[in-house]
Figure 1: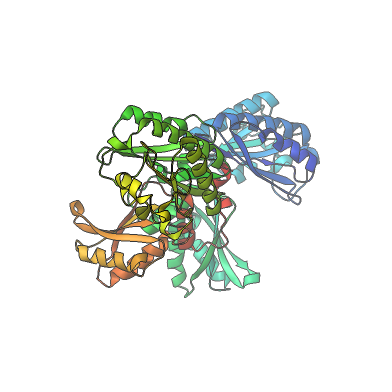
Figure 2: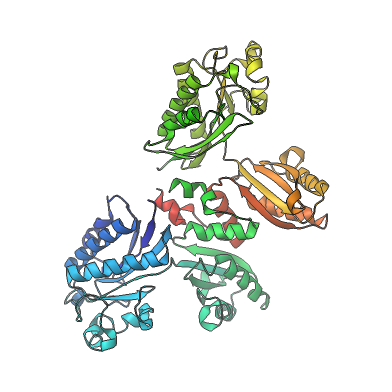
Length: 298
Length: 298
């Protein structure tokens, strides 16, 4: 695989194991497509799939999986704790290797258009693919959820980007877009004072004056009697892991606490880690082509 | 490729471009084998090939390339600045992914035995594969070079591990073994005083009391008016890059100088860089399976 895109579709099915297998099946045994993970949540009644592949093959498999989900999921009968608006709730495409954001956006639009035509499914483009600013934010797009969509779609500003301008009777509506890989990165502090974690989170996150691609909240790790700054790094190529780490170290000093460790939850692109190593070792003129595994994947 | 071994054979041909292409040809267009690089040196009259692959396919290609080199290279006519004892001078196998040292040793022995039988080529096992301590060190094994080998082999302690106990009339003798990936890692200092670089090199290298898997010398970078500790890290899994970096930072303080940067020459395994990032960010319980690209290569 020369070009690699990641796709992390969320399907509104987290309970029926047979249907779950049918939905992920189009990602199996295909050249140029690799299913990395799928995790269901019974309470959310939702499944998150992680799949990577060559852009075109990945797009083909994704459209196929959408067809299966539309056949198997009836949103009129769906209940679960997570906000949702469709059988295929959201389909983000993520550039990973030899692909830039504009190419991920193109693929997202191709998939959106083809799926809309093929299944008569209304689709919103969101995040990097959004055609109007209000649709960049998934929470705003999804507001009203499945039950509120028929009413929401009557407003001209919520006319879907592709497909009919009414919801699919059983599959609802879907958001398709492009974004960077999210890194779930948490930093543990040498205190059990949640106020300190909250204060530091406020200092480093974009929303309240911090780093552009960092979302952060303070949480308690009760079993360890410490607190944590829990973060989503939404674009590690622009807001590097080491930068938020060093900034939190500096902020923590103000409270007389220190960093006791950190954790990465789930998958992290190699480049985020290499970038960190290159920074701390002060390596001059390093190229990703020097990484043996990078050459193997060429 | 699930299991990956690297092989870096050195051939005694650095001038005849046609022959060079013929020698590397067995590494091309094979499933499970990927030719990453080949560099020739006219003065050394020598070529270094870097190839990776599944252990068995790599072994098969390597044996084939040895056959080509034996046909094309006549050591009686060979001259070059680099010490050498055979047409295929040395063949190191290096564990990279899902392969440990013992498996690399096994592959090296299989290749040595099969090539010895097929081509009537005497072979010494060296480094990790050496059967006696004196053969761990390639310089000792190669001592006497091609011209001195007929005499050297008369001594019972230099009886080859495989093949005839006399040299091949045109291809000489070959060393085959297993070792870890060498990382060429250099650290630049804020001084032009070579004595300081030499002193620090002495402090950190194994030979004179430093880190077990570190070789180091001081050199001058005249164009930049600074000096450098130039190193070979011979097992990054046991002597980590960050460890030698931090140790040199500490040693440099004694001379009132600091590290101004570092460089990695050539290829570096992903794990060496990830390990560095994990150390500096203090990441708890990190697994290489969390690296997206690592999962793609599975």
